[in-house]
Length: 124
Image 1 (cartoon, one colour):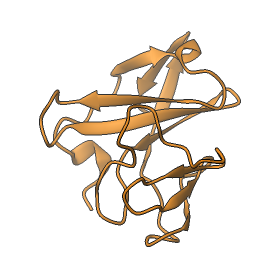
Image 2 (cartoon, one colour):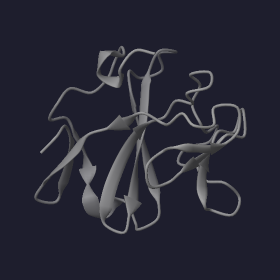
Image 3 (cartoon, one colour):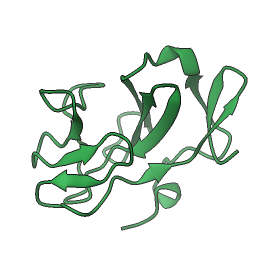
Image 4 (tube, rainbow, N blue to C red):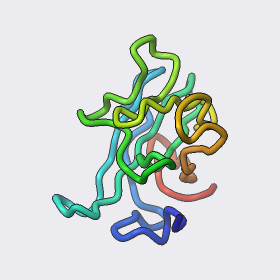
């Protein structure tokens, strides 16, 4: 699998994503770069009690987006991110697949940095 930053339409280091208060605690916000292209780059940020984590929105089992509807990434009980195609379940804290066809693999993490109230792509 090609690293996230080598994907077509991947956001460049320093790309502004949103303000940190745009994502309530325990929720996600999804981003899409590349418009309507079938090769658009999709990612999401999860607010884990003020610790923001970004992941590429791509199941490691078959490189498809986890969700069918925007920002709908959680299992019915809210404990995991879930792939709606394969029913793989991913830990919300580190992206590790804990159940499903890609158990032991993980969602690809994307570095984030905070600049005041803003969340940007890239390491701090």
